[in-house]
Every structure is written in C-alpha cells, then in structure tokens.
Amino acid sequence: MPPRKTKTKKKPTIQEEAVKFCPPVKDGYGAHWHVVIWIIVLAVLLSSVTMIYATFAFTTRISNTESLNANTQLQSRLQNVNDRLDLMEGELQNLRTDLKPAEAPTVNATSTQ
Image 1 (cartoon, helix red, strand yellow):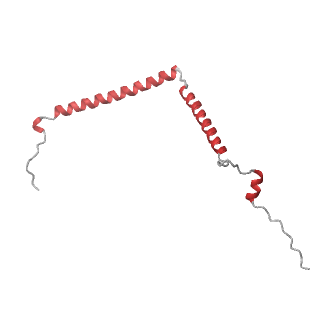
Image 2 (cartoon, helix red, strand yellow):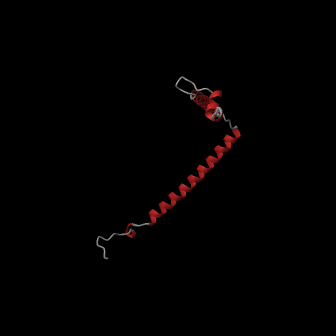
Image 3 (cartoon, helix red, strand yellow):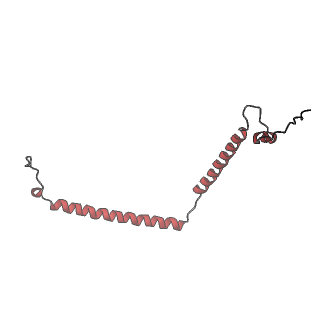
C-alpha cells in the first residue's frame, strides 16, 4: 500500500494574520474614516492654540516708563534727522548762490570726434 499523503498546514501570511485582529470594513470606505477624524481633531487643536497665542500677543502690556522712554528716543532721533536735513538745505542754498549764470556749463551743439 502506498504511503498516505498528509496535508501540511500552510503558514498564514502577515496579511491573513492582520485580518484576524482588524477585519476589513465592508462599508466601502475602509478604515480611512478614522484618519479623517484625526485630521479634523488636529486642525481644531491647531486653530485653538493659534487663537490662544494671538490673544496673548494682543494683551501684552508695557509700563508707562517704557512707553515714555521709547517716545523720548523717537523724538531725539527725529530731531537728529531734522538737523541733518537743515544742514543739507543750507549747503544746497550755498551751492545755488555760489553758482552764477555765467559759470553755468554750456553745451556745444557741434561736437568734434
């Protein structure tokens, strides 16, 4: 009598093992719905954190002394700029009075090359 053939049990693949723990959803969407939910949750969380930081940015307070010091510095810088402009205007006026019409450069209509 010939020896009997015994069936050896085939080792399941990783995909077959995974189906045991997480069976596929039959609604046509698969398991993508939970990804969409996580994206929505993260978007809401990110927007709320952004709004909180924006609130802190608008509620920053400075003291009266700091404001006064900043105002004084800006006024002194503006005065320096005005002084420089006055000097430049004075120099420009001197140049205008020094330049006489006879000394103005003339342009020759004919040029020699």
